[in-house]
Image (cartoon, rainbow, N blue to C red; front, top):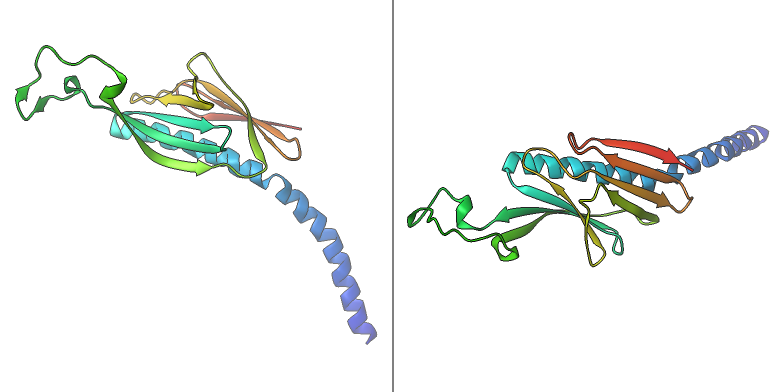
Length: 174
């Protein structure tokens, strides 16, 4: 009986040591998952823009906590080489909002307890009704932007996306 009691005491002591360690490792898991989601969305938007030769955009909705990647295709005749009636006529349509189709390619929700604190850019950040858009171009470049995220433990991470390579630089702080 003493041996069984000794085994139970050793197990309780080892659990008492292990549980706080595991809790601290889970503490930043949601923030790290959100950072991975944003980086992967950036890579996906760039790859889609280059491979499909169409402009894409990442839309950040701070209120709903969503990230949406959309493809933007031109529907004007000037982007077609030949259509059913033959060559393009000289009086091609001008650019307007009606000449583009926007298709959702991917939509993700950021983790709960993580908020987008700030979105900044070098002047190309578009905001409409609380939704911020960042453009990715068919040549592999994107608008430079920075995102600051914060979790419920006030840990913040700054994600800085390079406009030439679309690579992310991370900076964690307390």
